[in-house]
Amino acid sequence: MNDPSPYQSSEMTPQSHLRPTGGGEAIGEGQIALAWFLFVVVATIGGAVAGAIGGMVIGAVLGGAGQSMQTIQVASAFAGFFAGLPVSWLTFRWQVRRLLAKASALSVQQL
Image (cartoon, rainbow, N blue to C red):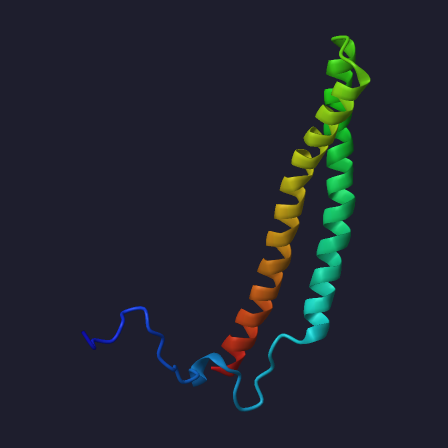
């Protein structure tokens, strides 16, 4: 009855091989801030353009079909949102890969 729970956490010691040692450089806050800034700018502008095109297409199709303005507005908003998601995802992947490439290059230099 007094057996330890398998869900009980135990204290873990930090793994020294994951920390930069001996003058190794880590990715700085400036590089992270730049990556975030580029992500926000590219994802916002690219998402807005993709959303505008998606909303325009849906609006034209629904307008040609004689739907009400309310229906066109709602459908265009959803289409624009979903058209902007891939732009955001691709921009995020681009920035993460860029940072991981820098981190990988720094770790190779330490060897």
